[in-house]
Length: 128
Image (tube, rainbow, N blue to C red):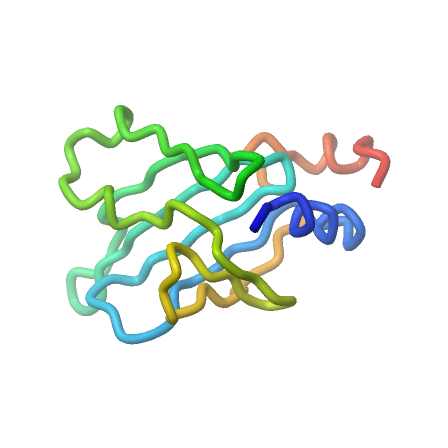
């Protein structure tokens, strides 16, 4: 499974990035922002009274469907190995990683994503 088809659909829809959230029952709220330029941002949030960002980690999508995470930048967090590593399936509104049954459902569509290098100006001149 490769990311290229997903990136092509983003370009066709003139979308900079899509935010996905992990489905199923989980202790944390995990979000994955996938940009049309191949950049990925994984974010983990707490639930409840102390809700907030636990950690985030940047990565790059590989041609073979693997995500190469920059684990050195988040060395202080011990559970970074729980981030998705390999795309194993997708449909129009969700992604599957690492052979897990719980899908990552599309949550938000972003017309620009400055943190990922896709500003409004760059999207305007991207051609598609």
